Image (cartoon, rainbow, N blue to C red; front, side, top):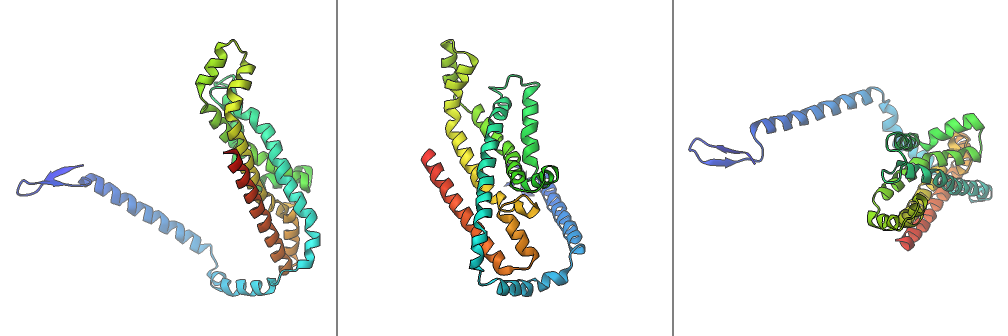
Length: 272
């Protein structure tokens, strides 16, 4: 803490000295200037008439969207099942691909920290940096619309997430157990099977359930870009301005997410 003296020679304790205070205020002013510049840019690109009129439009749509069209539920069971299949099978496929990537990315299990580990880390970053909707757009263009494109989009998006958390869990294992098994003369694969895998299995199970829970949410909207599932029904209802159907679909999506969250919490609780 800086100390200065006043005119009488008494010591004055200060939280910051003069230069630190000036630097702090300069940073505040720069932040305010950047915020105002960004706000000005946003304001210039915004049609404020529609913003002020939004409450009236929302009330009008809300009035037309109620009550939900319950008779439309018969057409949602199939798309809802497709959505759950996308989330489940996509998660399983992602785990199959993420496990070897995680072991190649972890410092204590990679065969080559100079060549193989950077490639594994690149795969993790590349798959995590692209959103599921973008993956779905690309895959719909490549393999055509349908549930399979959505499944693969979920899988590709999940590889980086699962592999990153798993390789971090691998790097945090207790090395004493590995050293004990190595001292018995076990091979590299035996050390991995009996010294590393048992330690990371709880983390692997938790990551799997957590990602499945996330994928249920993401798979509900992939139909908006032609990847099948209940999102396709939502897109069709929005295009035809069938607001009571939209309300029902949103309620179904909410119910699916809540049930998935409940199952995920129960499974994680049992694991932990």
